[in-house]
Image (cartoon, rainbow, N blue to C red):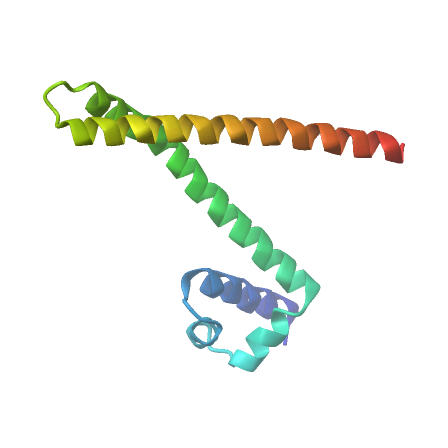
Length: 126
């Protein structure tokens, strides 16, 4: 198989793996055998391309969530402050806001601690 054709087929396989629910469905979509696709998944270069594509897809999804997050927090804030809303809705919205705040703080703290550990590890290597 020519290099360009194989690259195109492996690109198609990576795309199919990202969109199809099973390896067999992905293989079928790009007209290769399941066995071939499973073998490709053991090859470091293919596995790396697939992992990179998964990471890019996840990053794009997270970015969409981040941009929607501001609006969602605004809705929760509005409900929690709406004196005409039922008390259950107001309490649920307030609880959600507090939980999100605490998770965000915990994440920031863990990230800072991880950065310090990575820095100490890197300094120890030098």
